[in-house]
View 1: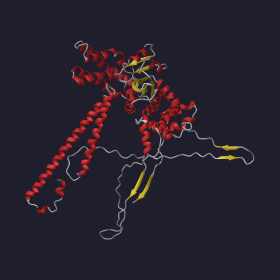
View 2 (view 1 turned 90 degrees about the horizontal axis):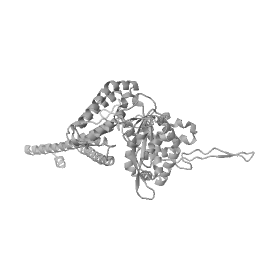
View 3 (view 1 turned 90 degrees about the vertical axis):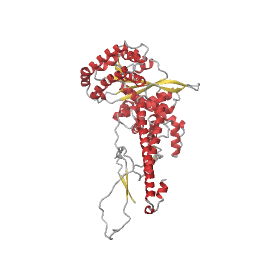
View 4 (view 1 turned 45 degrees about the horizontal axis):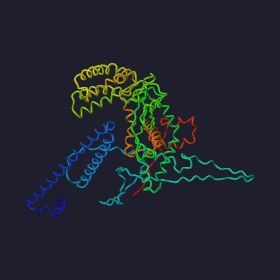
Length: 526
């Protein structure tokens, strides 16, 4: 239809009826396209809402199924948004309905600038032939990608011989991150971050390297990961000591499939995370996370992990933690997010009035926490005592009252009993400004593991699980300190082989400092 309209050479030769028919056809086409655009926009907004809702469920039951559903919805969202842009590009002249403009971020200042200067083709004024002089300039920028480049660094050690005797001198061989390995620090850091931060399994990385002209088979990359884990072990140990020296830590665990030797099947192992982060209480102590691997979920593992720890442990209601609180060295602080989640699931499923009110009451506690986040512990404690404690006391009375009205086997009654059974641990945060209202710090630390688990399918062995825990510890700690993990690991791998063990603390992320090189700009005239 559009081609037919464009083919009309002389509109003046058409009579009124023909012109009205053309206008009616144009208006119909515009209305149809606008309606389709409105429909696509509505579906895009709906998909964004559903994805956001599913992401809040990522650590709940059936998280693997939820993750898969999110991936499918995001793929559909990408296709809809791409189709929308394609339609707009195909018909730029048609009037469109107003759309919400996305805020474009400025291009990063640290990137190098390659300046292309475009001069007019005219040497003189096209109107009068006069001399042209510069009046000003218009500047626009586009972001371009330079493909990854590789280089071979050849170390040549010259041998020098004495002219008077048989002595030969030569510079010592420079150290390598991996003994007799061909991987430089930057390449090795890239492999580690790609696997454990960007969730790219080694076989996929091998395919990417091959496309870029470098043949690195999966077994070679696996050897590098294992050797790097061994090399970084002292730094992981220093991170562990820093975490366990805190007065309060967050703990959680997540399943990780591991290939069982000789069985052709997987067993369910665990990755445990322990997080030190006192910034919400106004402290400037560097945050850190330590991961530990175990082949099962027996309670003996956290007991061993926390054998030297004294203080507050913020965790969920896992029974394996309970024996830790018996000796009086470790005190339990429970998680209000777990309590709220149980009521929220009931609210979504049944629209229960009791569940709705429970969620609202717990939300009032979180509103207070948002106001005091980052303030000093005494200030937080005072706000909780004066404002949160009356709400919690009233909540406890209300829960007990509601419990008498419900069947013992109902989901709502189970959620209420879950909260009341942990009441002392749930309210401990009221008396200590260091304690958080929930265990979100630990759940955030496990998010990367949950994403990676979807791509890896399983670890190859217990040794692979231990290597994963080591690298997760360093990458997670770098992220907590707002440091680029790849730059940090490159720096560490450049230094650690030659560093005395007594100075290993110098390589902890918060002691890492780097500066951007002076990249400047190049000039290209066209």
